[in-house]
Length: 322
Image 1 (cartoon, rainbow, N blue to C red):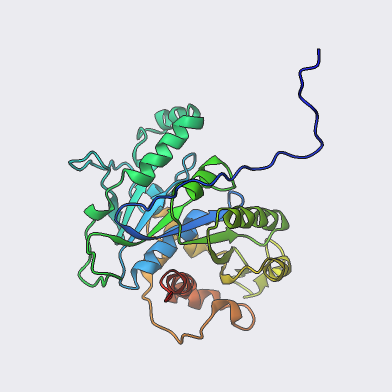
Image 2: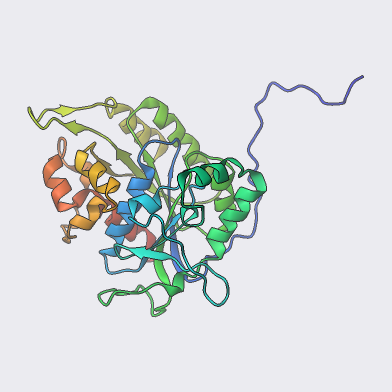
């Protein structure tokens, strides 16, 4: 019997139904950090970007929306800690390195076996309920402000910037976030491999359909400097495909971050590399992406200019005069 369903050779189209977007309470600007695929260092970029932004004398928060693979507790040295609730039963962020943090990782059982079992059972509506709680039931005004902080406006109880570490890809969480929240800018993280760059285009198209401004892209693991011969090695391939993508898509390069053992060590120790550097206001024309040749890896890691320059560009985009 004919069921009435007609076969189609066309792939299903993603639905981007317009919804009323909301502002996150006590947050002035929302900056999302995304990647088309996992394993490109998105969370590492998110953490260091947040810390570098805080050096610009603004108040910064970090929200981990990578529901199935939360990394922020480890990267920010906040493992095995549980947030408390305020009088309205809103979550109070945990704080380290001058950053107010919230993650689904704080709300899961602390032993690894229970945590794993909890994650396996999460599907569909349960995931979306957790996402909405993390977006709208967190008291960002309850975080301490350092004395040197100069806020963008006179509202001392608000975050100036909330950095959101998104899950990889263009799944339900990413699309729902774009439909639910007023987002002021997006940063896309990628590596030089062609397979990663293909997914960048998918993420870019998603942001454009959701009317989310894309500030630019960060090329992570762009090169590796041999500690012995000092040769520059393109372990993940040439950056030529990345350069071609910039030209064809209109994306702006925010900077290149090398493959460096110090970034890895500092992340594993819960002390991101940006905590070890001091931001020095450089010439406004300084642009990591425009430096001739490859950057001196050791010098830039020690001075923190990789993430500091990237954060400065994000800041300028978020707070540029209308």
